[in-house]
Image 1 (cartoon, rainbow, N blue to C red):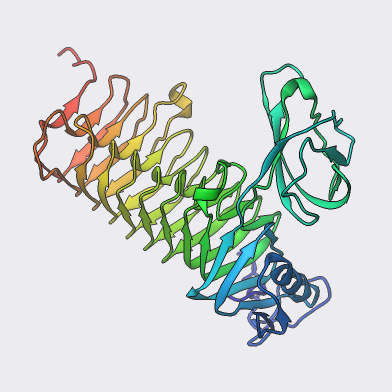
Image 2: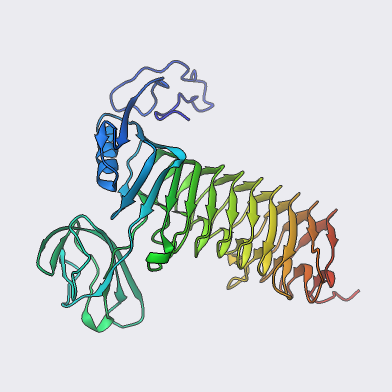
Length: 430
């Protein structure tokens, strides 16, 4: 995938297609340039350093010159803040020889109120906080009901008072018990396009960090982005998700290894269209692959999803028209593939196809190979191998809930369960 936009054909209205574009001012259609700027980072790189500041400098430089590659040389890099990505930039490491580790988190309460228009906070105990740190501010809203979550960077200080890179835009008042913690994604991007992250190992250092869920962070976290490729990335040990992308379109995640995260291995997030999730290993997370809200027209294939504590794959709220095929889902704690129960007919995961998967062994005695809950309908379950190889106990191969709509079961091999299929829908008279 070139970093510049490819030549595109005109709409089918009689105009000739663009086959040999020129670089023209302000036009996004341009040649597929064979070379662009590359900047290396590392102890002996063009930019010398082993922290996020050195890599951020390289990202910003490459973006300033129209895009290119930041090559992170072999070594161990320790982060006190996210690297904030930019459009048309490729991040490339040296596989498992390029390791990025999140520094341990520190946390403290806020000592004074901050209003939504403020651009500063006062910490109760500033030990462990430094200028340049990425932080997450969390508390309750003015009514004490909703949660406030704000990600910012500390850019200046006087004692316990710190200036932020941006205004808060939310109230942080002491009755809501607000706290600050040095929590952040390792790589973060918002409102970007044409981005690649390849061949790098990201370690969240979960033993020394607090939890931050995948709606805000992960080893990689993207928000409102498009045309993204993540390949050959190891995302491990994050106290949260491995890779999370929210309202991001045409995201490809391929040949990655997301393992031992406390949250989700891969999290195609709300509203994401056309994700391609192929040939990844998702192991020992809480859930392997989680389709969030409104994920549509996606393909998950040839993934190895092994030993996840609850669910191998979970799909639910308005996640329609997706294809899940040829995956190996092994030793899920509770359910191999879960269709979640949602609040009503229009909210369920309709028109999804589950084909040619191998779902083998479940941890808990009441485990289910494929569990279709709620009013889920127009689902096709075809040519899957669903097996349990030890004592069946209370396990079920395929369970269809009482409210489920049309479910097609065809040519599946189901073995080793107390019940191969448990259909709880009422029997129609006549």
